[in-house]
Image 1 (cartoon, helix red, strand yellow):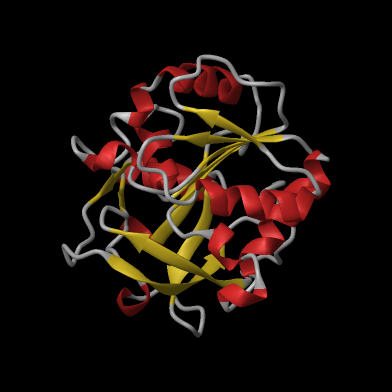
Image 2 (tube, one colour):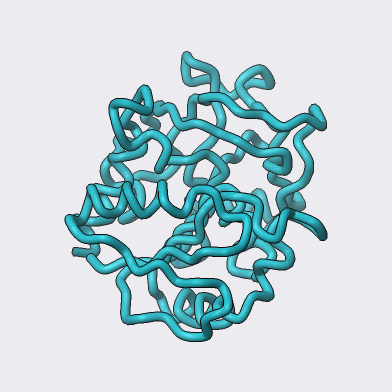
Length: 229
């Protein structure tokens, strides 16, 4: 599997994503600077976490207008699997590849800790390594991770199996005390209609090595490598 990681000024998880991909695939991904206008032929595009452009306008809004994003949007619409993590999720919504928006956390504070998630759909190449309804642990680190969409959109996401992950308690229950940012219906990640684009706020690349305190995120990268390799 050949992958590309998009690098913006302010990215701080691009190297983490590259390391996770290299460990899963055996080869380093292409690191593509935001001002480039072309992408190499790849099987996967990763839009990493961080604080692109310092979040000075709105999280992900400026990055979504970077030159490289025109090509990312085109490739994603052509069916190239695309993964957006944290700020990458925000960028994908701003670019129109995923519905909804990421707003300020309900508590109006930056949250940085490990959270538990429940797998909503394990029948995609992103999530095929997990069992249906499996509870996993990923870290989060965001101030604007409160996923919002109107009720019709939320109903459609749920009805079409497009909720990838939900925030849950350690026991696996959807409850207010398991939701770290106030996201609608505890949604932590969603797919596009074809399930070839995944955006999620938690960081699987920060849970890909035992030294991180857990390896639940490695499962995602290994599943992608098997499916797309």
